[in-house]
Length: 128
Picture 1 (tube, rainbow, N blue to C red):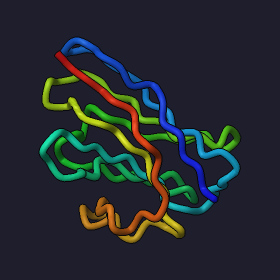
Picture 2: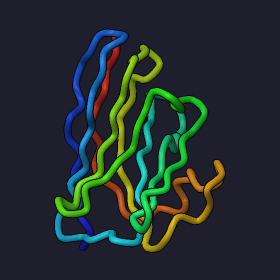
Picture 3: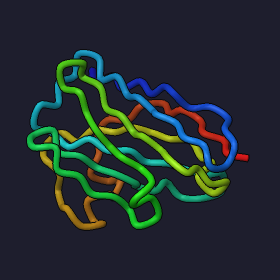
């Protein structure tokens, strides 16, 4: 059973920053694709960043490019999302997710939730 546990969310003022973490437990994603998604109330889940467990290659949604950074520490089996210059529109539940294999695409297609099999329960980020 793959268990992903997010942490690091909270309430921050606009312009602030946060670092979200996702502990993958005993799931090892040495070569697999990991990603961060978010869902605001009344909106669809949005893929915002993916990273290759193999070589660290990344891809971001245009909405977060330049402000969000996805990274991983494979020794700690942990995925991170650094968020800078937070805006009220970044308010959402943030989820980490894992694919069963490598990243499907390095274009926006690869950000689709349908490619990800394993999901955490999310951590709330509120920006005021």
